[in-house]
Length: 316
DNA sequence: CGACTTTGACCGGCGC
DNA sequence: GCGCCGGTCAAAGTCG
Image 1 (cartoon, helix red, strand yellow):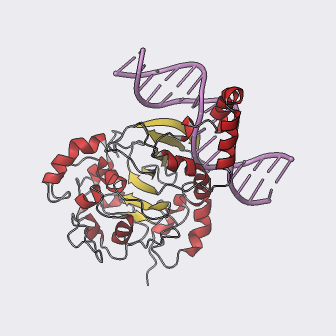
Image 2 (image 1 turned 90 degrees about the horizontal axis):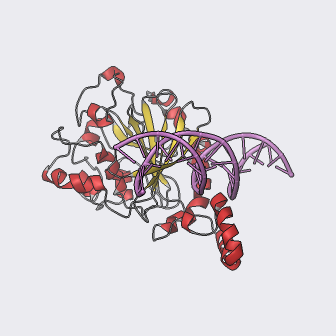
């Protein structure tokens, strides 16, 4: 592997074909309705979908809902729980709950996001006068001038279990952590990840009133793999998309020619997904030269699924 | 000088 | 109640 930074899609047969088979980590599971090639085809071979001629462009432009996409990726999408594309995944539920990117955070974020999700309409949580350390500082100010406001905020906040923003995680083979996805991000934190030598970085969309966040971490079992988790939906167009959409629209197939593709493509794909499901994390999309699909968020401990132990598909 | 990153501190949830 | 941990804050530093 070169140490030169490169975009994951450069290795993708969709975008280029520079990876050898030996470099490929096999996927965790086969999307039931797809062969890998089907997944890679521009029409996405959306078996069973209502939109027979839907292409990725449709996805980009938000005409496909998350349920449809879930089905497209072989995932079920219940309105009341996590996506569960496989029948025998209950074994992983517990680990999933414990996983920092998945279950455990569902609770955390569910409490965090009630304010954040509401922030999409305007002020972010930070702008409110009632949160964490900053709030402490604010509180000092608030206490002096606006104690009632502070109290109200506290009272309002407590009872509500926050609704989580939908989350989508990409598992991307890349040497660069912060993949270009067309949006501008500001890093606001970095934390060491338990059981991993690689830190997790926290980013927030720099666009005003856009509460989308993303977390980026490297899979410790496969350092060449970057896990990017997006949370929330952009309420604005991607600057990159604005630049690139026209060119993309001209192509009937995203996967036909490789020269103009940008690494942001797949990210935008999911950015555009309407968030009609209550599932907080739609799934993990594993991107590599041969395979591109969503890994269900309840599949299991993410660290465990990258790449080895669960790679093996049980032979009948 | 503004935008962005770094990093230590802090907060809240959760399990024990 | 305590400690752990993920997530966030915000001052200081860096960069262009």
